[in-house]
Amino acid sequence: MDDIRFAVLGTGGIGRRTLEVSQHKDGLTAVAACDRNGVAVDHDGLDVDELLDATEGNIASGPQGGPGQSSGDEPRDSGPDEASGSTPATPTDDYASDGGAAAVEGGGVKQHGDQSGIVASEQGEPTETPIDDIIAESDAVDAVLLALPNLEHDFIPRVAERFAEADYEGVMIDVLKRSRVIGMLDDREGLLRESGITFVCGAGATPGFLTGAAALAAQSFVEVEAVEIWWGVGLKSGYEDNRGTVREDIAHLDGYDIETAREMSEDEIEALIDEHDGVLEFHDMEHADDVLLERAGICDAEDVHVGGVLDVRSDEKPTTTTVSVTGTTFDGETGTNTFELDDATSMEANVNGPALGYLKAGVRNNRAGHYGVFGPADLMPGF
Picture 1 (tube, rainbow, N blue to C red):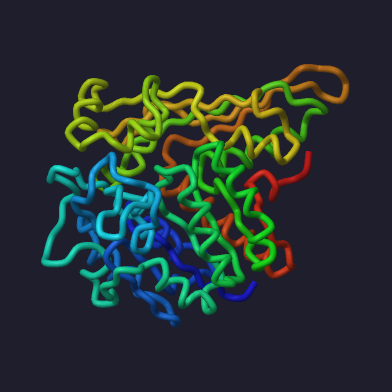
Picture 2 (picture 1 turned 135 degrees about the vertical axis):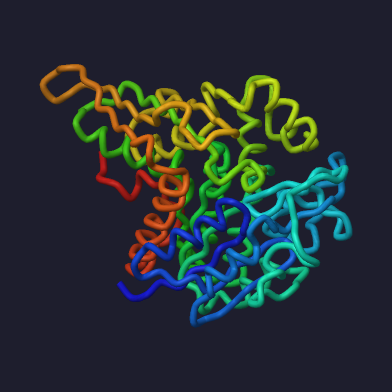
């Protein structure tokens, strides 16, 4: 395969690690990246080390308009850290990149220097229209990885729609989690096909890596009865670098949802974390693994259950990540295939490694003329 030139939307925790891990994957060249404040483009390849060094502990974020503002209008750019529309002068949300979130009432992500985020890099240029700036360069981009929060259900689908309406031809990859977002992407599949976009959705760890593992484990059976996904994550890169990810996970806790999590202040999130001693446990999450496995013909969505444990204060995984697929074999026996991730594998290894692998698979399909919306299980052996 020829060299793949890719862009990253969002340079919080997930975006930064994508750029870092890409240096260990053959045939990948990062040529563009953006965050709330800036954009960096070099068609010969970004200096990833310089960009990461310049933005270390310096994520683009800042106090924005608080909850309760109108979400009916598009913001000035629906930037890569703005999860919802609002009036042009006051973007609704305060999420940075994938990404860190600054408290509405101050606090926020640690920052150094006079400029925050990509504009602190010698490669960065300030902009008020980061996504539009990437779209303007998209003729020279084979794939776009969206390292963005999805704290509005239609945010990522709307970003995909903007690329399609600009006649982008290439691959788009996301690591979204919510089941209902898949339908929103499917609703736009005709537009994506017409543009020539191959969109691979839910291509991180779960959904993504573990969805693919379940699809592979299902091949032993003539009927799948249940898929159980149980994950463990220790934030090796630190809570400061993963505020948006933690906020999005909080939405899966009992008594919380997207709206309540989005409106929580940083102090409220810190208090919730303190209340649980830094360890959050999730059960029956609305994770897109269910829809993605059903659309691939593996099993019914209702037979998929996802839960896990997040430790925001330790590098160690609080529990081993496993996927268990139970079904009936061709000779009538009931069995369970279990896939287990080694506890030594990091979040970078299990989110960004697979995401970039799916990106490369997406490019192969795109160059073969396969356009539309694909889940990770669609790229595995068929059931």
